[in-house]
Length: 260
Ligand SMILES: [Zn+2]
Ligand SMILES: [Zn+2]
Image (cartoon, rainbow, N blue to C red; front, side, top):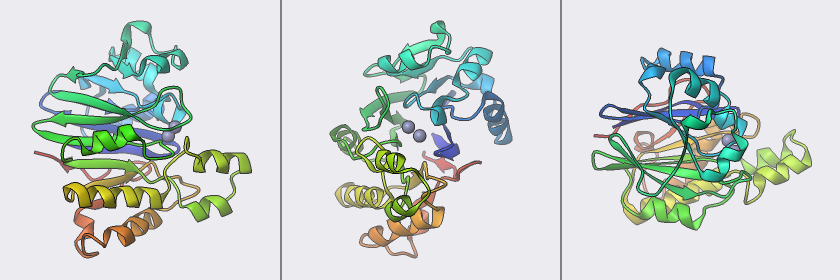
């Protein structure tokens, strides 16, 4: 199984997970043309995708989904209520997530996130005996997230580290937007993410973590990394940390996780 992100920020999100012949695109938050180019740039072809999986209906996750799905006849999966906001995806390509869903070689589980979308989810993938969790766009750590993260040890965790709280409060966003981002239906701050990873590592051992969905206005890759590093140095030395902790770039391919 391998995994990487192609875009990860408040402006657009997309990742790819592959096992055997199964290739799943996670969110499609760039234009279809940019998604095609981004896939081709890393040697992947849109026509070889098995399906597109959506976490929720916000534009930074769905911008290119309708066109990409239609052009390549790709089934798209989302939660039942999410479809009401995505009528531009042809009905015959719309599929609901269901418990125990298996797409080719990859089994899928999901958890509720806490976000101002209709029915948002985080995704957990299982293939070749490995589990990988992908959770962005949540204002707090939900019970469902904890259950999904701790059900079995993870081989990889992609987790939102959206903003630095100080940068958000002192930054240029209007007050209402600051409140929204910082709320329980908004996004995780660096410090919240760091505490969750630390708790998880303590509970079930160290696994590779990729910090994702950074705000380009209220965060920097260095700040997200350093905030996590300061907390995680309780468990692992700062020198060893780069083996376990990385930051997904806003655009372009992240570190490729080879999870065999
Ligand atoms: Zn988002
Ligand atoms: Zn969102």
